[in-house]
Picture 1: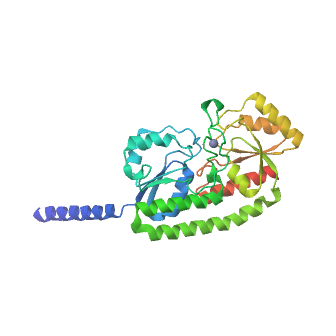
Picture 2 (picture 1 turned 90 degrees about the vertical axis):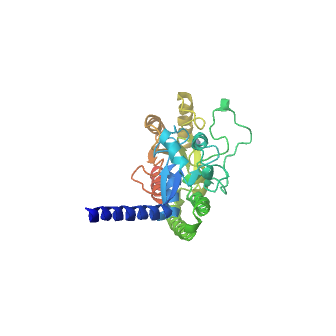
Picture 3 (picture 1 turned 180 degrees about the vertical axis):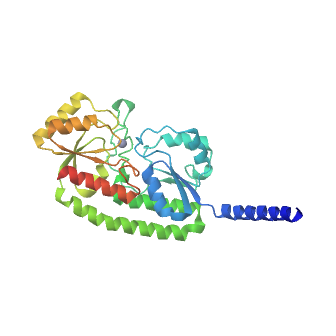
Length: 304
Ligand SMILES: [Zn+2]
């Protein structure tokens, strides 16, 4: 009995030591507001991080209701990554409730992924609630442009290095590998879209200004009259008439939006409708480059 007890104690001690050693090298805990930021954080963090996205794939990122479990998650996070530009404002209440100085603005683990991004569609006048436009600080959908994807990765790299300096070498190597993969893929995306330079496309929400800027496509109009304002019959009729007049034949809509309005406009205007992933994690996409692959394919499909 004595031997058995000693054995149990020894095993328990060993388990405790292993647990203690494990926690000393625990993965850096990363919380991101959206699946795209989470996907890029996984690339840069690799095996040294555990990453969670607060918004789920295909959830309108403009409006996310935080759950009580999210407060606990942010409370124990080492790194917090957000889109910024007043896009994921819902994260502010979470940060306030979580009382985690490490990941609060100014803390070492706080990452605003919009830093160093050249902002587009910054309003020249102050947007008020009455105007309805929800892009008050400029267009926040830069993460659909793979060039911006590399900038996001850089901002995340700096945050990870601050939060876990002992793993800086690994993060640097992962960052280099990720940007090299993006540069490689950029060539095939350029080739795929090159034949459609200057061609007009109709979309649902103003999600694509950065992407269009990169690939030389033209936003002809959106089903929403203004960002965040649902389509109205009067607006859709004007859009359909304009599309017919100008022979605009391509519509691309993200999976987060309903089918009714896009299918109606495509039918009435005689245009070709293609669906693009709104998030990493839908349409069988598992990482950032996979999502951009599907997006490029959707625009190519609608335009050809
Ligand atoms: Zn938006």
